[in-house]
Length: 125
Image 1: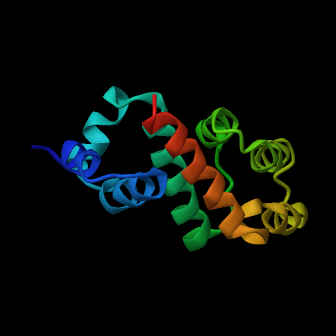
Image 2: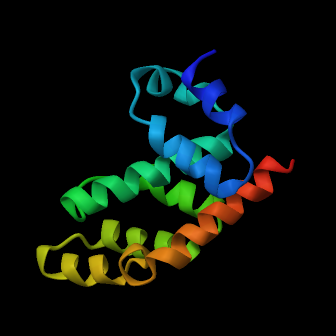
């Protein structure tokens, strides 16, 4: 049984699934199989990765296209809008404004509750 199958076999709800993905997302095996995972699991892993990078590095001057797509698919539209605005105007003087407008900085718990709900909906399919 691989990392992904083991993680998925132990879940009972969306929060469990997100935690399981957070526990394994950096393993080489998971990264190797990333493109073969269902898109909704890819979205969750992308958001976990985004949260980790944001906590460690703040907003970087890089493309957030895949994160914006994942957030949009997940219904986290406001977060996607802030990142889109940042990508369109990543000037140093505005970076702090965009950073502080991110839901992950303003309402961390509510943001993750939405991710858990997204996972719950997809688990039930």
